[in-house]
Image 1 (tube, rainbow, N blue to C red):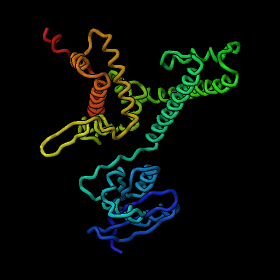
Image 2: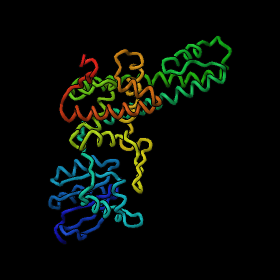
Image 3: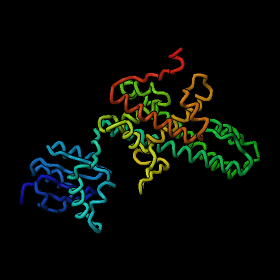
Image 4: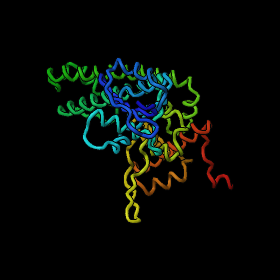
Length: 345
């Protein structure tokens, strides 16, 4: 067998597939490995480049294999797909991964440390609880609306429904319905406690991180947003520019170009949906505050005058993403832009 320089590893739960090539790109081997054989296999071969798709357990195996002296590179699965020749088998997928990792324009994903992965898990679980709470609140609202009990749309306003449920002397709600609605109410209260507990944990870790503290100086970037940015995209050097960072989050428009004509569509919504959602919500806060402020940015005021609210929010979120990249890249603190009219006066 020729000296192996590149290996494509198709990850799985129990049965893995490896495909190796030599320096000339000629196949050296293609074989299956049981989960317990993976580390033993990579210990037995000289250091080489190992490619794998981004998926569940990819970071774990990347850390384990890299600790054995190999150069591990993780790629988005969508970038590996064009290298699949035909069909769908583990052997074909491993070969495609091996070919993709050798491509000179391939984009790779940085390997997360255990600390980064643990913190991102904290944010994901919080997001899960928030979604569950939103579903429960919507269910409570819709069910109580069937009995003519409606409150203004707001998470804080839903507490008014709690007092109606606890008033057992009120005959407007049948007893059978009151029983199940109280169960929903208790679930919402339980989720509130869980979310508050996770928020406290996020706040505790955020206070110990200088980058998070600097990001929080940006208008619209709160504690959770800053912590999520550090967890998902802490290394700004991975991105070539601020636009590259905003594009990775999915805040740049889709481009349709053909025959010399270019048309921009809606945002791509590619990349990290958690960061995109947090930045969008932060942008809406900035817009609402600017409506009340006399010192609002002239650029923002003019944009709000001619464009819909949500379109402006996306533009602000895009600008926030670019500012975040600049702060992470240069290690600076946010400085409010100087109004040229005030400066000239």
